[in-house]
Every structure is written in C-alpha cells, then in structure tokens.
Length: 197
Image 1 (tube, helix red, strand yellow):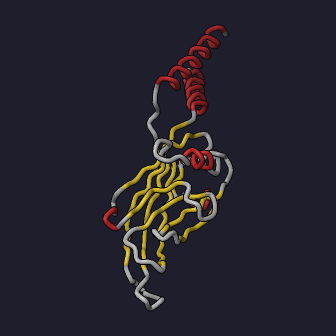
Image 2 (cartoon, rainbow, N blue to C red):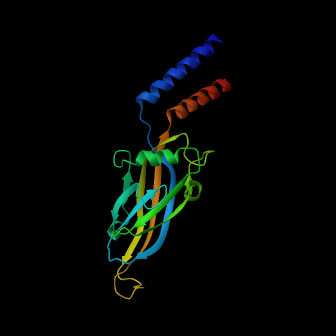
Image 3 (tube, one colour):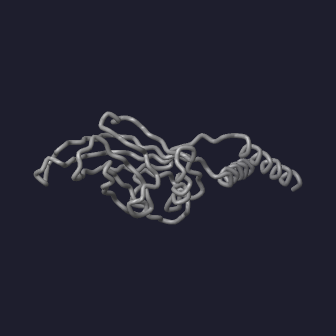
C-alpha cells in the first residue's frame, strides 16, 4: 500500500515538473474548409478574410490576400492578434458557440457565413465535446487554396465598377492539451502500467 502511494506521489510530482518545464508541440485540432464566390460594386485586386462572433466587426483578421498568395499560409496567434485569446476561449468553452467567417473587399463591403462551431469543423480531433474543451488553442492559420479576382466580372451594374471573386481557403486550428489533461493522461498511463503487472 505504501509503495502505491509513493508511486502516486512520484507520478504527480513528475507530471507537474514535465508540465512546467516541457513545451508541448502543437497538433492540428481541427480544420474549416471555406469556399464560395461573391462580388461588390468596387474595383479591387485583393480581399481580406476575418472571423467574428457576430456582425460586421473584424475581430481576427488575416490581412490582405491576393491571387498571388495562392498556396501561402498566414498564421494568427496571441503574439500577432490582440483578439486571439477571445477566439481561443470560444473554441475551448465546451459550448457550441457561433462563429462567423467573412470575406471583405477593401471598400468594407463583405459577405460571410455565421454558424455554430459544430457546423464548421470538417476535421476534428477526437473529443466528447462540441469544441476543443480541454485543449489550449495556440494558433490559427489560413491557407489560400485558390483565389480568383475578376474586374469588372459580371458587371451587373453596367458601369464597369464591379469585382467578382471566387475563393477556397482552409483554416487550421492548432493546440496543445491543457496541463490538467496532460496529468490525467500520465495518471491513466501509470494506472494501466500498474494493472498489467
């Protein structure tokens, strides 16, 4: 009995030391595939992709993207975006929150899609939660798979002031287990090892 308690305390201390001294490598938690087409009464050669929890406010913004950026990946993290932690908390809250993904033209006209998290994720780490509860989101990347911008495009106004665009992008969410999750995994491994003996 005393030996089991000593092993338990040793595993607990070892787990705490590992959690405080080792930096976990982020893994892919999920992906969002976002594609579509749109247009606006403006002549432009670039667009912007952003996330918000509702409405037209850009809270997480990947900056200006042009057709020459096809194949490129842009990353947001707590270091690059003041609103990153807000989205990380939405994605790890344990509730099916609303996420709105938008595409902006430089004149600030935009269109987008608003839906629950469970709608967006087409590749999702195995979890019993609706989101990444129990994980720490470390970065979110935007990969431009395809982007075409055509001026004046369809020209529905007949005045030549119009831009059509078609896009296909992938948002990838990366993260690491919360320290408590790492400890649970360590204890589970210890328990299984003891049970096998």
